[in-house]
Image 1 (spheres, rainbow, N blue to C red):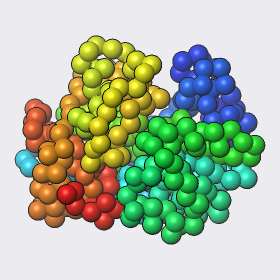
Image 2: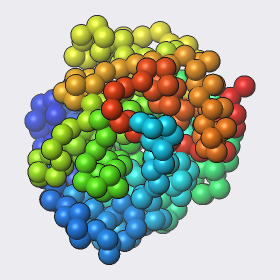
Image 3: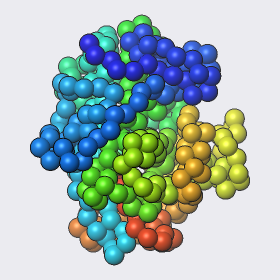
Length: 367
C-alpha cells in the first residue's frame, strides 16, 4: 500500500498518518488538509500520457490507480468572445464530483475498510456509489429526502445502500458523520477529506494544459462546500509555486441568493461564518445549498487572496441560465447554470471560464 502523505489540521497543526487517522481532527473536530508537496508537471511530456486526470501524476498524492473510470480531460468550449465553459458534466457519473471521488475511492481501496459511508445532495453520492462499485467496496450514501429521484435511481443502480434523511443537507451530514465514527468505516467525505480537493484541482491543471500553459483572467466557481473552489485555489498555488504560470486568476465564487452564507460573510468582511447557521430558503441550486460549510474560513481566505469576489444569483436567473445553455446545445442541471447566470449578469474583464458541473438528465428542466 502506497500512501504518500499525512493529514494535517489547518486550525491546530495536529498531524496524523492517513492510514490510522480518524475522519476529522480529534482535537478541534475540523477537516483535514494534506501534508503533501506537488511535483512539477512538464507540459511537454503530457502528450503521450493517459487521457484522464491521472496524467498529472507528479501533482497527485496517489499513484497507480486501480479504480479509474477514465475521469477528467473534459472539453473547453467558447460561449462568447470572452467566456468559455468546461464541460465537466461529461464525466462517468455526469458530474465534476468524479474528480474527487476517484481519489477517495482509490484511498479507501488501499485502506480496505469494512464499509464506506458518504453524504450528499446527490452528485457526490452518485460518484461515491459508482467508484466504490468499481473498487469493490460496500457503500452507504446518506441523502436528504428532497434529493432528485433521478439521482436516487443512479445511486441505487451502482449498488449502494440509500439512507434518506428527514430535513436539510446539514441534517444529512450529521447522520453520516455519526455512522462514520463506527469501527472499520471509511468516511467518503468530499468536505472533510483533503484527497477530494487533490482530485478537483485537476480541473485547473487541464485548463492550464489546454490554454497553452496559462490560465484565464477569472475562474467562476459555484460554491456550497467549496470543494471545486478550494481545489482550484490549490492548483493555482501549485502551478505558481512550480513556476508554471506567471499570473494567477481571480476567483469568482457564486452562490444562490436563497442560500448564500459565504457571500454574506465575504461582503461583511468576516473571516468565518457565525456559529449559528443563517436562515435560508429553498433553491433550484440544490448542489450548493449549504448553510454552514466546514471549510468556510478557507474558502473566504482563498477568494480574498485571489483578488476575486462573491456574487449571488436569483432563482429566476438560474431558470433563465439553464434554458439559455440548453438553447446553445448544453443541457445541465440548474446548479450547474449558476456561474453562467452570474457571468451573464455581471461580466468580468478579460477571459472567464465557467464550469458546467452536472448534467441536466440528473434533475430535468427547472419548472
